[in-house]
Image 1 (cartoon, rainbow, N blue to C red):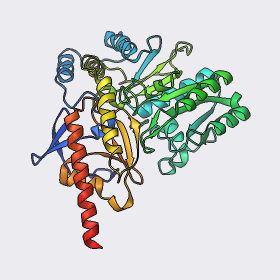
Image 2 (image 1 turned 90 degrees about the horizontal axis):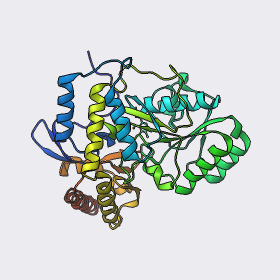
Image 3 (image 1 turned 180 degrees about the vertical axis):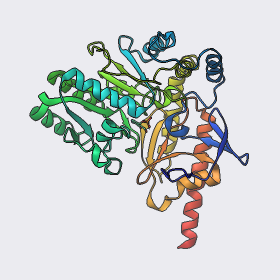
Image 4 (image 1 turned 60 degrees about the vertical axis):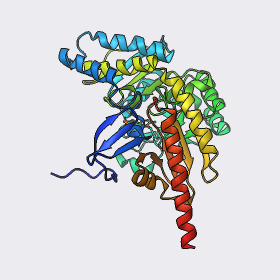
Length: 386
Ligand SMILES: Cc1ncc(COP(=O)(O)O)c(C=O)c1O
């Protein structure tokens, strides 16, 4: 049997990983500024995370959600404490798409409405409802097409206000990433998020904060939406939550009341996943990783802004993007092959940095030096050719 050919792949096989580093099958070491797509939050194979999963594995790995699971209660308490959303309610699932699927369903159950507002360049996942609020035609199968979703321009306050004035009473939810990831690291303005809050309150709609990529401390605050100083009604999360162990969740504000069987899951919140997620939060607290993300992120952004060839450096904390001009198009590939540094991308020409929140300043410096070398080499090659 062959694999279904889903993505173009880098020709690298990773066999070992530690902190912000990975090693390939030939023994080469790489600096990982991609974090397996923003998933590695506390660092690869963190010893506390490994131990907590191993310990749990010895006890019970899985039992269904038909019995009490004190680990879920412990996780809810810890997540409330670290995120500051202590009065919210936790529903556990397995991925980001699933989290958004459940968030949208709950918004619809809660309001009794069907219409959803999403934004240009949004990415919310690939399952049915999640992909219907994703602004990329290539991901949307005919069966996912719906009249229930309106895409408005990102950060356009007048367009949002006009849409609510006309259709506000039909809107179940507004869903927005605090910082768009797949869309190319576009930061939602604080005033835009505040306007969403005000309009959702005025018209009785649910504000869904997709924090799958920009959440869990990556921005330097627990939720990047927190920079706006307003609360969403539902936050979705996944990626960094398990540091690579699959787990996702939504947290719901207290006014959204649960009814039995509206949501459900077989694997969500299993014992092993809870152990992994607890380990992540414990390490985040102990090692002050949100503070580190803010500090090292600011350092990186300042260094990047000082490189004249790079355009439009943006982001928050350790979620950073910049535009690469056409003449430096091979830069990302060269960073991987010549410097052994993994970075992320966004179409058409954005390099995305999504490293572990424990990234050290010396690693950031290594990247900046490597980047400067590769830019100089590309410019030299272009001059030689001219
Ligand atoms: C903002 C956002 N939402 C949702 C998802 C979907 O998450 P998953 O791939 O875990 O389903 C992603 C994945 O990249 C994402 O970046």
